[in-house]
Length: 139
Image (cartoon, rainbow, N blue to C red):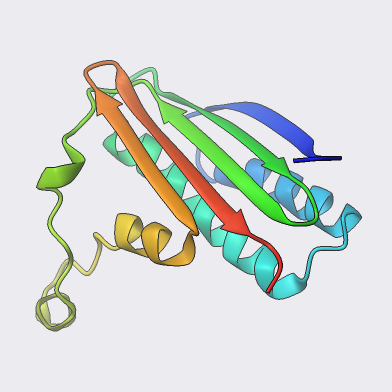
């Protein structure tokens, strides 16, 4: 990624802290002249990845490390938590019909991130989970 800019942030578990990463992304993307619709999708990706890290990390002294590298062509997002990990193959695909009738409508994060990404990878073990997302920023 020629002329790319990287931002690294260690986020503590406090309410709405994901907005710090979103603001950093906004500023860098606008500086690079990225289209607003692409910035909007990138905001969703970063927000979902960070919230998942805090919700599913399972660690009382949780922090989530966020790094993203952006240039005019693409955004690469890296989010890491330090929780108990999980087996990604055991996560059920949400069923739209079942979710619409259910009291708990949550559980869409991974599916959403996969569908909005050009490349989506999860590595998880007993010392945490790493999510890497690649998003093309040109049409």
